[in-house]
Length: 300
Image 1 (tube, one colour):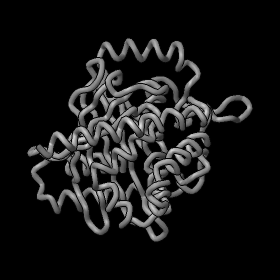
Image 2 (tube, helix red, strand yellow):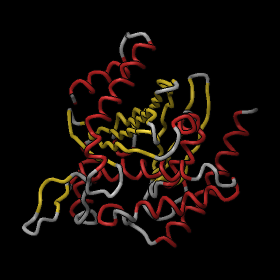
Image 3 (cartoon, rainbow, N blue to C red):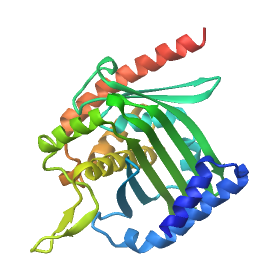
């Protein structure tokens, strides 16, 4: 089943198939995955309808989250096909300091500025420039891809994929985060895992201890799982506040994202809530200012 899904996704993301055929393949594959994962979504260690996995293949590091969100597919699809809303989502992630969006002759772009968990201005953060593409936008299937060919410390081949299909009581979502490390980034990661990240784990259960408690994956797979989960929970927090008055919406999303991540403190706790909120309010202000500057430059 997994090999079939990978084949169908490869068809969707880059072959000579007609667009309608590729979209159908992607939708059928996601429905098949939902049927396969349904028991694991209903009973798991997460306390929510979520399933997380990771892999390392051909030097690519991949983290994936599958989940059910209690929001109508149509509203989700309308929001997530827009680059501007992806910047709103990205800023919730504690490592994203600023996000801007723009449209050029070559299409839509998102600029992520990634840094430490503490407040940083975008000038001191790492810039990642993602090409934004809507691969499918049907009444029963959404597929969006963000692709950046290069990143910090020589890393390459960044891909963010979001897919979604409607369910009777919500939407089934698949989120994938992929990148290819470099030798330099590998050294930095090894240093992190030996120091600040030494006690960190991911979400995949690899076994149980003598007391029956689950053991979780660690190392690089743990890193990509944590990152994928942070983005997935950002999408959830974004959707849960679509009906909040606009003036209060962003603050409510900050609050909700932090609370969602605190359900998994062993994996995701990094800051106290008061500090996270303080930094994000600062980063929101700089994001608004940078976007205004970019908009003004593109209109002249």
